[in-house]
Length: 296
Image (cartoon, rainbow, N blue to C red; front, top):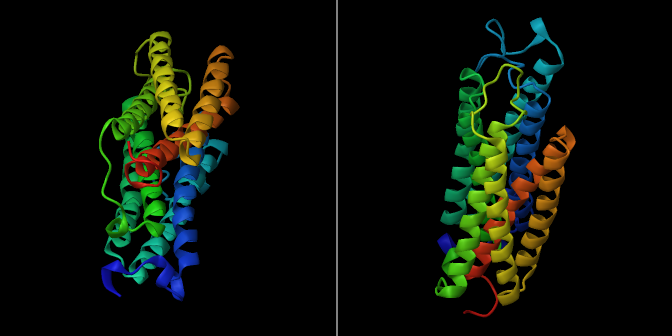
C-alpha cells in the first residue's frame, strides 16, 4: 500500500508486525549490550588484548597464538560485532518488507552504524586507547541507542500519521532535559578518561583533574534531575517517570562508586545506567514532541 502502509497491515515474513517489533527491540537491546561488553573490556584491562586492528595480532585475526584472558575478552567483544551485524541486517530486511520509507531509512542508518562503530573501535586500538577517542567511541554508541529508540517508536507511530509537532515552553522543557542529559553523558566520558580505568595499564589519561570534573558532572546531574522532575509534574507519563527513576538510580550508583574508589562492578552498572539514560531521555523528547498528552 506504498509509503502509508503501517506495520499492523503486514501479515507475513519479516515484515509482519511481530517480527518488525522483535527486531526493532533486538536492535535496541543489542546496542545497549555492546556498551556493557565494551565496558567489560575496559574494566578488565583488556583494551589492548588484541594490540592491533583489524587483525588481533600482527600475524592473525584471532589471538590463538598468544591467547590469554585479556586477548580472549577483547577478541570476544570484537566477535559480537557479527551478532550486531546479523541483527542490523535482519532489521533492515524487515523494514524493507513493511514498504515504509521512514523505517527503511532509519534501519539503514542503524545498519551503517555497525561498521562505523567497528572502525571507530579500531581507531581506539591503533591510538593505544587515547581517552578522547575512547570517549567519542562511547558517545557514538549512545547516539546509536537514541536512533534505535526512534526506530522502535516509528514502528507503531508513522511520521505521516503523527500529529503536528508541538512547540512552546512545554516542548522547550523536554528539549532542555534532552540537552542536559547529553551534557551529563559527555562529561561522564571525560570523567572516566581522567580516572583509573584506562583499559590497559599503559594507556594514557586525559590529564584533567578527576575531582573538579566529577563535581561539574554532578552539577549537571542535579540540573538534569531537576528538569526531569518538572517534566514529571507537567507531563506525568510512563516515559517521564521511567527517566526519573533511571536518573535517580544512576545518580546513586555514581555517588557510591565515587566514594568507594570506583569498584569495577559498580562502574559496569554505571555504564549500563548511562545507556539507559540515553534511551529514556530520547523516548521522553519524542513522546513530548509528538506523543499523547495535553499540549502546553
